Amino acid sequence: MRITLSVIKADIGGFVGHSSIHPDLVSTAQEMLEQARRRGTLIDYKVLACGDDLQLVMTHTRGEDNPEVHQLAFEVFKAGTAVAKRLKLYGAGQDILSDAFSGNIRGMGPGLAEMEMEERPSEPVIVFMADKTSAGAWNLPLYKMFADPFNTAGLVIAESLHRGFAFEIQDVKAHKKITLNAPAEIYDMLMFMGAPSRYAVKRVFNRATGEIAAVSSTERLAEIAGRYVGKDDPVLVVRCQGNFPAVGEVLEPFAHPFIVEGWMRGSHHGPLMPTSFRDATPSRFDGPPRVIAAGFQLAEGHLVGPRDLFDDPAFDLARQEANLLANMLRRHGPFEPHRLPLEEMEYTTMAGIMRRLGDRWEPL
Ligand code: F6R
Ligand code: MG
Ligand code: MG
Image (cartoon, rainbow, N blue to C red):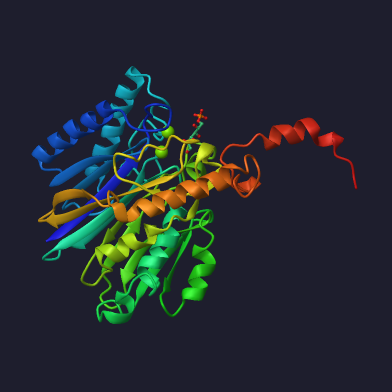
């Protein structure tokens, strides 16, 4: 059976500030998606939240980029925005850049990761959702899952993974893409993937079978809007087991926190902390950035789950390390490398300061 898994998310208002989602936004989305399920637009859905982002996880048989499904998500975000405005939640409608739907939600503000697949006899998938960071945050964990034998034992010892994976990498600034193969081209690949503010992995494929293994959201809101409107707070869908890394290999890259862009005002480096759904409420200096992992078994398109996969003491040490790294970086205050390089900052007063002080700069 061909199933499409569509994850569409947006920040349509935070509670309190940018730290989490108000339950009324979740219930509004649930009611609307339930109606869509009854109408037959969707097979199933789950509404989740990570920080101040509302996450719609939906299954159907309509394929990727389906106008009906995209419009449904858009209507949910509009209705949620109305609720957020009534409650005067913070930044109501923040990610909705346009009022009129024109057939596809891509480029309108919300983030999306969609994957059409032939549902296997058993189809374990993990939906990762992050807050206070950007799309390139998935580059490092995706490399580890699909190209690093020190992370994924299956690359060495499982026939089904041994030919490696192909990575589709997007240049989010020049709007171009390239597909590179692991393991043959890993050194070329890392040149790009190691610069996550510019290059982000969009899709990964099993090279032996051609099957889609992973898809991420790579929208950069700041690029779309031409001004700061929030970090992308990206999502990632990964298929597991069989021809793909095992659930444990897919989760393993998060056992140590790594440093990502985002955090306060989208303008700082900070550790990505894996947490339970309940703890995905970034409130220390609006962070540190969070990631949650929702595990599902698909059953004829039904979403059996979610299991809260980071709600596991095995990730306690990662959380502790993230807190230590957060302390170390915070001590730098407004200094790099805690603060992002000038050209990467989402907020900046630099132009104004230069205008004011321009003529006080003298030649050396
Ligand atoms: C980062 C984020 C927050 C805000 C910060 C300031 O992605 O959402 O850290 O940037 O709280 O928000 P404003 O400018 O809305 O007061
Ligand atoms: Mg927000
Ligand atoms: Mg957010």
